[in-house]
Image (tube, rainbow, N blue to C red):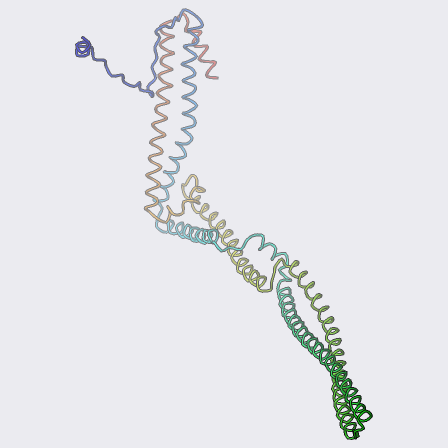
Length: 386
């Protein structure tokens, strides 16, 4: 039987949503003979009137503002061509200057404020600082080149000194060998002479002569090497002394450069010069920006004065609407938006007026329905009106 019940069951009416904008006053369940219920009902109506009145006051101010804006637009569009041309020229100057200002603000490669103000503090010293740093860097390069050259020469002489010392050691060894060979030859000749009674005078002569020549040659070479070694030692000492002088210059120059880099907050003359050029460009651009700001302010005041000469109620509003003054399409769009805003405000004001009027009529109806409480209700209304 379940399907039978489902087939013949009553259809339920769809639940419609309440109209939230529509207020409903019902006195059902309210006993106006009881003071608490009566007062609570009247106070509720009076609170609705007060709330609606507050909203109307707020909306009226905005509505008046929008209306005055539309009225100003009509006054401006009704101006003669000559007066309108003067206003448009002023508005055009403001628009052009604002575009220049926007370009400056949107510029990507602007100099950082920290770098800009750091350069500005030493503006009178920067060019001299660039010159000093550049000279110091150039001098430092020359000093480093001298140090490299002196270091290379010293290493070459030290290498020659080692060669001479090895050569002299070899020559001393050769002299010992020659002397030993001469002694051995003399001993052998003496043995031949005395033991075998041989004639060895020629041998003595040849041995002594050969030994003398060999030892003399070695001694001469040794003395030449010794003299050259002394010259090399002196040259090395001179190079070391010269290196020390150059090192002092190098250290002093490095310390000076560290001070200059610290003073001008840079790490090279090239970077400081780049910052200096950027600063000069930035300074000129900021000067132009400041001049543009001053001109904008001047022409804005001029525009306000020009509009004030006519029946424009709030000329200051047109400072930010120069595009509408110059372009009719922009003016039409603004007018359309303002009309929509005013219609929305009018609708909201009418709604609140209806709410207040309905609540007011409800209070009057209650007072008429219960005349014995009319004086009390009137007193409550007067207290709320205060």
